[in-house]
Amino acid sequence: MFLQLAVWKRLVRWLTHQSQDSARLNLEGTIRRDRGKTVQEPLNFYKMEATSIGFPGSTNLTATFGSRLRKRSLSSSVAVGGKQRSQLLKPTVHVCRNLGRGLNVRSASISRDAPITTSSGLPLREVPGSYGLPFFGAFFDKIAFYWIEGTPNFYANRMAQHQSTVYRMNTVPQPPFFPVDPRVIVLLDQKSYSTLFDVDKVEKADVFVGTFVPDLQFTGGYRILPYLDPSEEKHKILKSFTFEVLKSSGRRVFPEVHAALSEVFVKWETGLKKNGKVKYNEALSVGSVRLNSRALLNADPTDPDTKATLGRDAPSIIKSWIIPQIIPMAVIRLPTWMKVALAPFIELLIHTFPIPYALVKSKHQKIVAFVRENAKETLDMAEKQFGLDREEALHNLMFNTFFNSWGGLNFLYPSIIKRLGSTSEEFQRELSAEVRKAIEDNGGLNPAALNSMPLVQSAVYEVFRTDPPVPYQFGRAKKDLIIESHTAAFRVKKGEMLAGYMPVAHKDPKVFADPDVFNPKRFLGEKGQKLVQYVLWSNGRQTETPTTHNKQCPGKDFITTIANLLVAEVYSRYEILTVDGDTLVSVKRVSSGLKPRWL
Ligand code: HEM
Image (cartoon, rainbow, N blue to C red; front, side, top):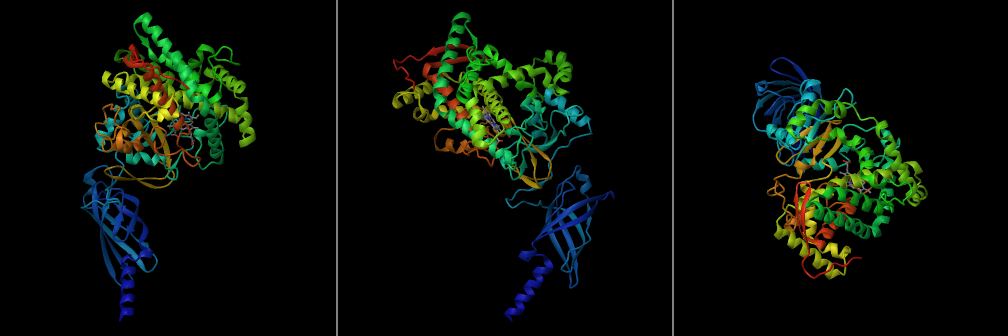
C-alpha cells in the first residue's frame, strides 16, 4: 500500500515537473504576438512558475503538457516586458519541444494577471528605457548629458521618467571617433549598485574610466592595474605590490601631512591678510601633491632640489596628463551664455575625438623621469620581491601616486573645506573642541588621537557620501543576471554594460534620511555606524577590505586617514572657517590656551 502510494506520488511529480530533480526545465519557445510577428524567447519552467520576457506587464501563463500517459495543464504567473501595453492583448505562446522523459509541451497561452516574483518577492520587470534610433538616440543623450541637463540631473530625470533606479540609456563618449558602444544599463540605488563590486558577476577589464580605454601611451604602453580584472594573474601581483608601497608609506603619513598643511595654512592666512579672501584650493592643491608624493614616493616633486623636479608647476603638469584620460566623462560647467557660445567648439575639440597623447607627451615624460629618479628603492623591490618588469612597475607606481591618489585628493580635499566651511559656527566649534581634546588626551596628533575623533570621522564619511571623488563605476555582465533594486528585479544579459553613478546611489532615500542634506553628524552613534557600510567611494563598502580578489581601491584606508587628518589639522588650528564657494573668506584661530602638540 505505502509502496504503491510512493510510486504514484513519484509519477505525479514526474508528470507535473514538481519532483526536486526535475525542478527546472529551460524551454526554447516561439512566441507569436497577436500582430503575427514571431519572436524567439526562452521559457523557464520552475515547478509551477514560468518566465517570459517579450511582452509588457505581468501575466499568467498556462502551459498544456502532453505526455504519453496524460495531458496536464500548468498555470503560473509570468512577467513579460516590451514597449506597448496594447501588445498584451491575448498573446499566445506556442511551444513545441521534446523534453525527454516523455513530456512534450504543446502550447501555452498568456493572460494578464499577477506578476511573477523573484525568490525575494520582487516583481520581475524588463529593464525600462530605450537606446532610441541608431546614432540619433545616442547623440541626443550626449547633448543632454553634456549641455542641457548635466549631472546629476541627467540621471535623476530619467529615474523619475522610468520610475526606476535601473534603466537603459546611452552614455558618453560615442562613436564614430571613440570606438565604443554607448549602450548601458544604469544602476542608481544602493541595492543594485553593489552588483558592480561582485567580480563573479561583472567583468572589470578595461572599464576603469568608462566604456572607452585611453591610449596605452598614457601609461607607458602597459595595461596597468586599474584596467585589469581580478581573474588576470597580473592583477594579483600588481595589487600586492601596491599594498606593499602603501605599507611602507605608513610612518611618513602623519608628519608629511602636517608639514605640507602647515605651509598651506600660512599661504591662506597671508592671502587673507593681503586680499581679504583667498582661493583655498590653490595652496591646497600644491600641499596635497607634496604630502601625497612624500608619503608614497618619499620625494617632493615641487622641491627645486629634488632630482628631475617638476617645480612649482607640478600640479598643472600632472593635471595635463590626467585630463585627456578622463575628459570624455566630464561635464563642463559654464554660465548659460558661454555654454551657447562655446558648446560647438568644446564638442568638437574634446568630446568628439580622444585627445592625442602627443599633446601631453613631454609633460608625461617629465613625471616618468621624476618617478624613475626618486623611486629607485621601490622599483628595486618591485623587481626582486614581485618579479615585475621595472618599467611596468614604474608606470603602475606613477599612476597610483599621481592619477589615483592625487587625482582623487584634488577633488576630495576641496570638497572637505567647502562642506565644513559652510556648516554652522556652533558645529565647527564642536569639531574643533573634539580635535583639540583628542590631541591633548593622546599626547599629539597620532593614530590613537585620530581614532578618538568620531565627529571628524562622521564628517569625512558625509563628504564622501555627498561628493564621492570618483562618481562612475562600470562593469560588464559576466553571465546572465537578475539584478534587484529596492522595488523590482531585472533580467540582464551576459555582455551588457552596467554603469553606476554614485552621487545618486549615495542619496538613496531608502537608506539615508534627508539624503540631500549635508549632515556631518549622520554617522555618529550606533545607528550612524550602521550607515558606514553604504559609503561606497572606494568601489566597495567602507566596512569592507580591499584584497587581490576584488576591485576595491587599495588606497581606501590611506585616503580615509589623510582625509581625517586634513580635518584634524584644520580644526586644531582654527575654530571657524568661512567659505563662499571656492573662496575662503575668513578664519578664526583657536581661542583657548590649548596648544596642539605634534608627533
Ligand atoms: C581620493 C583618492 C582615491 C579615490 C577617490 C580612489 C578611488 C578608486 C576607485 C573608485 C577605484 C575603483 C575603480 C573601478 O574599478 O571602478 C579605485 C581603484 C584603484 N585605486 Fe584608488 N582611489 C584613491 C586613491 C588611491 C590610492 C592612494 C591608491 C594607491 C596608492 C589607489 C590605487 C588604486 C588602484 C591600484 C585601483 C585598482 C584596484 C584593482 O584593480 O583592484 N587609489 N580607486
